[in-house]
Length: 453
Ligand SMILES: CC(=O)SCCNC(=O)CCNC(=O)[C@H](O)C(C)(C)COP(=O)(O)OP(=O)(O)OC[C@H]1O[C@@H](n2cnc3c(N)ncnc32)[C@H](O)[C@@H]1OP(=O)(O)O
Ligand SMILES: O=C(O)CCC(=O)C(=O)O
Ligand SMILES: [Zn+2]
Image (tube, rainbow, N blue to C red; front, side, top):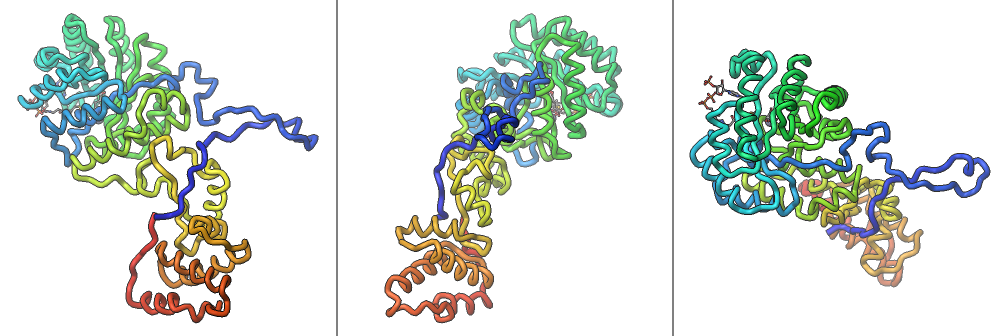
């Protein structure tokens, strides 16, 4: 176990008012969140977004995914408990079991609305409405690639079948969303025409999908802004992560006025997946902590990710936002000192918001005397600052030879403490410290890394 601190929430830095600073007086402090909605984004939904959770649809398209009915139900309940607004399920047209699972999840009586995701086709629409879902997400490719190589239909056909499917679903009194697949490689005029058409007949939402993960935030901002001026319904966005922009694109879409973002747990989906739920939560809590905490049970995130990771047999990545094993671990001495003084110095997220703890990793040669002093205090030992500096030098000396673990550091500290409190019994010369001698010998033969987070 490493030393840990439990100091208060990470807060955004305060803006200061310049003129007072000039006179050398204390600056007037105005609390603003520079990571929050920008005042010029008057259409922004950064403080009013909703989640369409698609682990049980897009996530089922992840290479490793197979969810039996029981697992789907367990995941659906966990998502609902977390607080997602919608749960999107695989099309009932995919297989007989998919259809039955859809029905079973609809009967759970969850708070989240249940959606299923279908092609723009009457056969699929009929199956979908019969499952008892709260809404249907309809999609059809509009890019040249998909029109040529996927369904082979032109824009007139797409518009005609979209109207037919939408009116059918609406006639059943449930929600309907129309989305263009591969939106960012579609002709803008085609896109705006089809969205205008479906908006006029009254869809709940239109969707923009970055199906191949090609879009960058600037393109997202422009497309969402343009669409926002064309339709009156809500806008939903779906971002693949092929070029690493899925979270940034989702955030930018909200800034531009989209309201709903498609996510999946750990981002699982086709290829390397979509905007991850946890990563988006990290981004959004930095922007509007109160809103995020009021809606989502963030302390359930790790449990939820573990559930899905185990179900699809992957590990949670070490660098995952929030739940990566080192997401709140601070190592270098300069960082550790400042974190001990005020965690906000090096943290934009507060681990306690997620039911997690921060760690100071001091068992290494990058440590500093402030971190070691904190460990000395935790061990209930009494050393002066100068003594802490001296013992830190000994720790670094061993850390130059091999990686350290906490027991190494603790025993160096304890030996040193004894040597300074009862010097006659314990000579201070570190060359004679048996622990170091022994470890130097071991280091030549054994590369074990005992440092722990
Ligand atoms: C980008 C996305 O992730 S979209 C969602 C993807 N989800 C899925 O594919 C769900 C799982 N899919 C399946 O189980 C199957 O693909 C099914 C049941 C949907 C279709 O299976 P099949 O009839 O055997 O067709 P297949 O999968 O080979 O080809 C897709 C068919 O859908 C048609 N199609 C593709 N997209 C659309 C669309 N958005 N709207 C209408 N038709 C479409 C294609 O033209 C093709 O039909 P064709 O065989 O008559 O040419
Ligand atoms: O329905 C949508 O909006 C998205 C479909 C999809 O998964 C994609 O285009 O990548
Ligand atoms: Zn997708």
